[in-house]
Image (cartoon, rainbow, N blue to C red; front, top):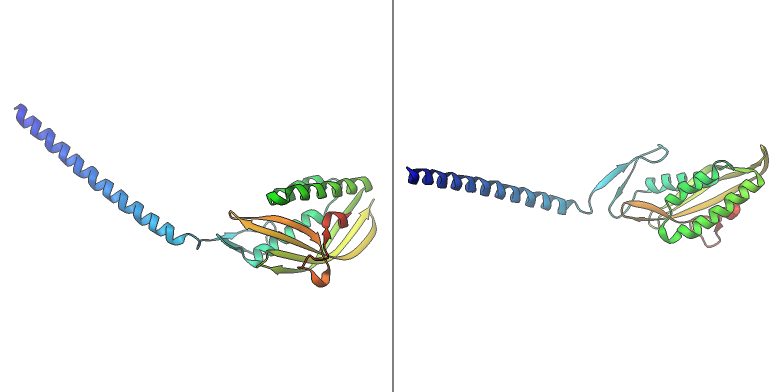
Length: 202
C-alpha cells in the first residue's frame, strides 16, 4: 500500500514538474517576443505632446523634435521672460530656470536675477507682442520678432521692435535652454551680434 502511495506521489510530482516546465517555456518565449518587439521599436517611437499654450500639436522621438515643438517652446519661454511685472518676475524666472540646461543654469540665473532686480527697482513692467517666428530645427534655434513695450506706473515709456533667439538642446526626451538672447532682426538666427535678453528687457 505504501508503494502505491509513493508511486502516486511520484506521478503527481512528475506532472507538476512537467506543468511548471511548460509554463516556464511559455514565459521565456513571451519574454523573447517582447524583447524583440522592444528592440525593433527603439529609436522609432514618436510621442504626441501638448504644448504649454495649446495652439498646435507636435511630436518628439528619441533623436529629434518637430519644428512645431521648437516653435511652441521657444515662444512659451520668451513669453515667460518678456511679459513680466514686479509681482510676477520672480515666479516666472523660476519657471524659466526649470528649463535651463545644466551648463547654462548659472549664467541664466544670474542674468535673470539682475533683470528682476532692475524691474522691481524701477517699478516697470514689459509686454512683448510677437509678430513672427522663425525656426531652425537643425540647430534647435527659435527666433521671435515683435514689439516690446515698457510701462512704469501704468505709463508707457518705450516701445521698440525687437528680435530674440532661443537656442535649445535636446536630450533624454527633454528640451532645455542653452541661451536666450536679443539678436539682429536681419540676422535673427545667427547670434553674432546678440546681447543678453536680460540686459535689453528692463
